[in-house]
Length: 168
Image (tube, rainbow, N blue to C red; front, side, top):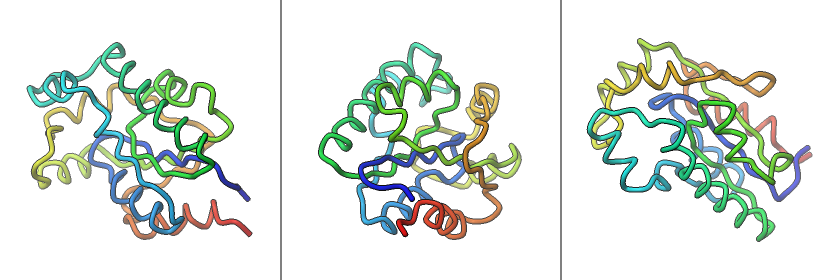
């Protein structure tokens, strides 16, 4: 049993379904959904939009902004679901700084080909399929957290995560 306040971070490479699963989780928990991509500074969006992968320094400020948002949620006594790639251990550390016991990660895993196809089909997102390889190269798969293959589908993944976090 996990009681409020807390944060669930749905993590994985771009195109794995973090946003869809995150929105379903937030609706199921009756809490706020936070889209991590909305906290990127304009420079990061421009860099990714031009086909250049972000480096650690680019992501540091982004993680700090998200950490501040998560602190606001926790300080108000609420819960939230965050969709955020959180690809490396250090990014997850930056994201949860001062909040580690209140942040729970869920990892959506998928193979390159399946995610690449999904990304090629989506429209209107600055993160294009040609950037996916850099995400996989950067990814440090987490250990000891709930992990779901994207082939399960967003609804089933969300339902399984809700079961994990349901208050009994």
